[in-house]
Image (cartoon, rainbow, N blue to C red; front, side, top):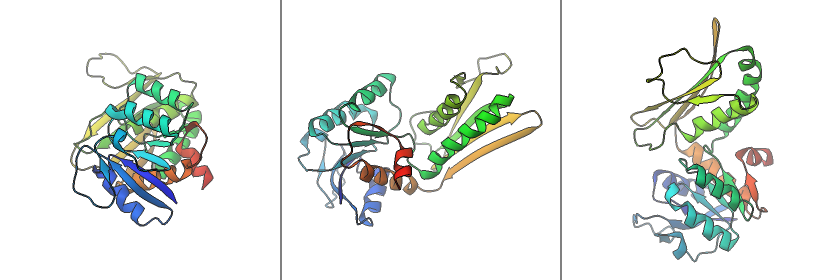
Length: 253
């Protein structure tokens, strides 16, 4: 049994994960962290992590980058693994995460779904063939109108996968409205669409002369991310300090 503290428990993803864990005999949410109290009696909810005295095996965080300092400090003090699912971290915060991984087990992923993490491997393989032959690479992502950051963390992770496969030679371009020039060969464009209740759609486009290859992923429910987060928490239980990826979770299953 993996005992989980759910950070952001009363948000959309927190509630989704709560429902998923109810059906999982190998996991239990023993406490929640959230500024908003919706009156749940399923487990105790604390307004900040420092108040939590419940013993657990891992934390899942689907909240806000603003509380990263407190979460990492708590986990380092308790020797507790953490699954970071929040996006929009600053460069300084990303450095903090790497430093924390020297003391505790940390799994950070911009997207927890099995499909997206498989897609990251596929676009790397495609880039080695298509981008190497001069195909232009563009990424288009679509999300609901409540999403704060753009481009999405998943879009950036997909871009990083392509860039890594090509020796990090690409420059990321987020806006061409002020550019009166032809597209550069080493540009990688990222475009964001926000509207309605789109859960998440990502297209990685390889555009060559007279042909286009597109890799697409569509999420129809937040449950795909929740299931991955719970699997990650169970995977991290008892793990030594270090930085882990969803690919490690997938390989272990």
